[in-house]
Image (cartoon, rainbow, N blue to C red):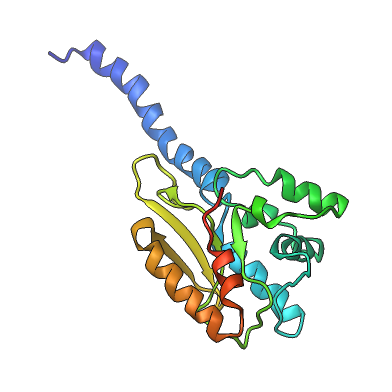
Length: 192
Protein backbone atom coordinates (compact mmCIF):
# COMPACT_ATOMS: atom_id res chain seq x y z
CA UNK A 1 0.00 0.00 0.00
CA UNK A 2 1.24 3.45 -0.88
CA UNK A 3 1.40 5.87 1.99
CA UNK A 4 2.13 9.53 1.64
CA UNK A 5 5.50 8.97 3.30
CA UNK A 6 6.48 6.18 0.84
CA UNK A 7 5.43 8.23 -2.17
CA UNK A 8 7.42 11.27 -0.99
CA UNK A 9 10.45 9.09 -0.20
CA UNK A 10 10.17 7.33 -3.61
CA UNK A 11 9.89 10.62 -5.44
CA UNK A 12 12.80 12.04 -3.45
CA UNK A 13 15.06 9.23 -4.66
CA UNK A 14 13.43 8.23 -7.94
CA UNK A 15 13.15 11.65 -9.57
CA UNK A 16 16.82 12.61 -9.13
CA UNK A 17 17.89 9.19 -10.47
CA UNK A 18 15.60 9.62 -13.49
CA UNK A 19 16.93 13.13 -14.02
CA UNK A 20 20.51 11.84 -14.07
CA UNK A 21 19.90 9.11 -16.68
CA UNK A 22 20.19 11.47 -19.68
CA UNK A 23 23.41 12.90 -18.19
CA UNK A 24 24.82 9.37 -17.78
CA UNK A 25 23.85 8.47 -21.36
CA UNK A 26 25.46 11.66 -22.66
CA UNK A 27 28.64 10.95 -20.66
CA UNK A 28 28.82 7.43 -22.14
CA UNK A 29 28.39 8.78 -25.68
CA UNK A 30 30.98 11.51 -25.21
CA UNK A 31 33.67 9.39 -23.65
CA UNK A 32 33.07 5.85 -24.85
CA UNK A 33 30.82 5.61 -27.88
CA UNK A 34 33.26 7.26 -30.29
CA UNK A 35 36.47 6.33 -28.56
CA UNK A 36 37.54 4.33 -31.64
CA UNK A 37 35.34 6.05 -34.21
CA UNK A 38 35.72 4.40 -37.62
CA UNK A 39 33.89 7.34 -39.22
CA UNK A 40 36.58 9.65 -37.86
CA UNK A 41 39.25 7.26 -39.10
CA UNK A 42 37.86 7.39 -42.63
CA UNK A 43 37.58 11.18 -42.45
CA UNK A 44 41.20 11.51 -41.30
CA UNK A 45 42.36 9.39 -44.24
CA UNK A 46 40.23 11.31 -46.75
CA UNK A 47 41.54 14.62 -45.40
CA UNK A 48 45.12 13.38 -45.74
CA UNK A 49 44.43 12.36 -49.35
CA UNK A 50 42.95 15.78 -50.14
CA UNK A 51 46.10 17.41 -48.79
CA UNK A 52 48.42 15.03 -50.73
CA UNK A 53 47.19 14.96 -54.31
CA UNK A 54 44.58 12.25 -53.71
CA UNK A 55 47.07 9.75 -52.27
CA UNK A 56 46.53 8.02 -48.95
CA UNK A 57 49.48 7.60 -46.54
CA UNK A 58 52.17 5.10 -47.50
CA UNK A 59 55.33 3.81 -45.84
CA UNK A 60 57.80 1.20 -47.06
CA UNK A 61 57.90 -0.37 -43.56
CA UNK A 62 54.19 -1.25 -43.66
CA UNK A 63 50.80 0.16 -42.84
CA UNK A 64 51.60 0.66 -39.14
CA UNK A 65 54.24 3.21 -40.06
CA UNK A 66 51.92 4.72 -42.69
CA UNK A 67 49.43 5.43 -39.90
CA UNK A 68 52.21 7.10 -37.89
CA UNK A 69 53.05 9.22 -40.98
CA UNK A 70 49.44 10.41 -41.12
CA UNK A 71 49.27 11.14 -37.40
CA UNK A 72 52.56 13.04 -37.41
CA UNK A 73 51.33 15.06 -40.41
CA UNK A 74 48.88 16.92 -38.21
CA UNK A 75 46.05 14.43 -37.79
CA UNK A 76 46.33 14.00 -34.02
CA UNK A 77 43.69 11.37 -33.24
CA UNK A 78 45.50 8.06 -32.64
CA UNK A 79 42.46 6.53 -30.90
CA UNK A 80 40.70 6.51 -34.28
CA UNK A 81 43.29 4.07 -35.61
CA UNK A 82 42.81 1.59 -32.78
CA UNK A 83 40.03 -0.93 -32.31
CA UNK A 84 38.05 -1.29 -29.08
CA UNK A 85 40.23 -2.73 -26.34
CA UNK A 86 43.37 -0.96 -27.60
CA UNK A 87 44.28 2.16 -25.64
CA UNK A 88 46.67 3.32 -28.38
CA UNK A 89 49.67 3.43 -26.06
CA UNK A 90 52.06 1.82 -28.60
CA UNK A 91 50.84 4.01 -31.45
CA UNK A 92 51.31 7.14 -29.33
CA UNK A 93 54.81 6.04 -28.36
CA UNK A 94 55.72 5.47 -32.02
CA UNK A 95 54.38 8.93 -32.88
CA UNK A 96 56.48 10.48 -30.14
CA UNK A 97 59.73 8.60 -30.75
CA UNK A 98 59.53 7.78 -34.46
CA UNK A 99 59.91 4.07 -33.67
CA UNK A 100 58.57 1.40 -36.03
CA UNK A 101 54.86 0.54 -35.59
CA UNK A 102 54.64 -3.18 -36.40
CA UNK A 103 51.61 -4.18 -38.49
CA UNK A 104 51.05 -7.27 -36.36
CA UNK A 105 50.46 -5.02 -33.33
CA UNK A 106 47.91 -2.79 -35.11
CA UNK A 107 44.34 -3.52 -34.06
CA UNK A 108 42.99 -1.92 -37.24
CA UNK A 109 44.30 -2.88 -40.66
CA UNK A 110 44.92 -0.15 -43.20
CA UNK A 111 45.24 -0.77 -46.94
CA UNK A 112 48.06 1.51 -48.01
CA UNK A 113 49.21 2.45 -51.49
CA UNK A 114 45.80 3.57 -52.75
CA UNK A 115 44.49 6.91 -53.95
CA UNK A 116 41.06 8.45 -54.31
CA UNK A 117 40.95 7.18 -57.93
CA UNK A 118 40.80 3.53 -56.80
CA UNK A 119 37.57 1.55 -56.46
CA UNK A 120 35.43 3.36 -53.87
CA UNK A 121 34.07 0.02 -52.52
CA UNK A 122 37.49 -0.97 -51.16
CA UNK A 123 37.70 -1.21 -47.38
CA UNK A 124 40.45 1.29 -46.59
CA UNK A 125 40.65 0.52 -42.87
CA UNK A 126 38.89 -2.08 -40.74
CA UNK A 127 38.81 -3.68 -37.31
CA UNK A 128 41.07 -6.73 -37.26
CA UNK A 129 38.85 -8.51 -34.73
CA UNK A 130 35.13 -8.33 -33.89
CA UNK A 131 33.65 -6.56 -30.88
CA UNK A 132 30.30 -7.25 -29.22
CA UNK A 133 27.93 -4.58 -30.44
CA UNK A 134 30.68 -3.00 -32.55
CA UNK A 135 32.62 0.14 -31.81
CA UNK A 136 29.79 2.63 -31.60
CA UNK A 137 27.37 0.56 -29.56
CA UNK A 138 29.58 -1.70 -27.47
CA UNK A 139 27.50 -3.77 -25.13
CA UNK A 140 28.08 -7.28 -23.81
CA UNK A 141 24.89 -8.66 -25.37
CA UNK A 142 25.38 -7.31 -28.88
CA UNK A 143 26.37 -9.42 -31.89
CA UNK A 144 30.02 -9.68 -32.91
CA UNK A 145 30.70 -6.89 -35.41
CA UNK A 146 33.59 -5.28 -37.27
CA UNK A 147 33.51 -1.70 -38.42
CA UNK A 148 34.95 -0.69 -41.77
CA UNK A 149 35.80 2.65 -43.40
CA UNK A 150 35.47 2.46 -47.16
CA UNK A 151 37.68 4.32 -49.62
CA UNK A 152 34.78 6.61 -50.57
CA UNK A 153 34.46 7.79 -46.95
CA UNK A 154 31.41 5.71 -46.07
CA UNK A 155 31.24 3.31 -43.14
CA UNK A 156 29.98 -0.25 -42.95
CA UNK A 157 29.31 -2.57 -40.06
CA UNK A 158 29.89 -6.24 -40.87
CA UNK A 159 28.52 -9.06 -38.70
CA UNK A 160 31.14 -11.66 -37.91
CA UNK A 161 29.22 -14.44 -39.66
CA UNK A 162 29.34 -12.35 -42.87
CA UNK A 163 33.03 -11.46 -42.50
CA UNK A 164 34.41 -14.41 -44.57
CA UNK A 165 32.35 -13.35 -47.61
CA UNK A 166 33.21 -9.65 -47.09
CA UNK A 167 36.90 -10.63 -46.79
CA UNK A 168 36.75 -12.71 -49.99
CA UNK A 169 35.20 -9.85 -51.99
CA UNK A 170 37.66 -7.31 -50.60
CA UNK A 171 40.64 -9.48 -51.55
CA UNK A 172 39.24 -9.70 -55.09
CA UNK A 173 38.87 -5.90 -55.25
CA UNK A 174 42.45 -5.38 -54.05
CA UNK A 175 43.85 -7.86 -56.60
CA UNK A 176 41.86 -6.07 -59.34
CA UNK A 177 43.58 -2.82 -58.26
CA UNK A 178 47.05 -4.37 -58.66
CA UNK A 179 47.79 -5.49 -55.09
CA UNK A 180 49.27 -8.99 -55.00
CA UNK A 181 47.10 -11.84 -53.76
CA UNK A 182 49.62 -12.59 -50.99
CA UNK A 183 49.63 -8.98 -49.76
CA UNK A 184 45.82 -8.80 -49.86
CA UNK A 185 45.46 -12.05 -47.92
CA UNK A 186 48.03 -10.87 -45.36
CA UNK A 187 45.91 -7.77 -44.67
CA UNK A 188 42.93 -9.98 -43.87
CA UNK A 189 44.86 -12.59 -41.88
CA UNK A 190 43.43 -13.32 -38.39
CA UNK A 191 44.66 -11.00 -35.63
CA UNK A 192 46.77 -12.76 -32.99
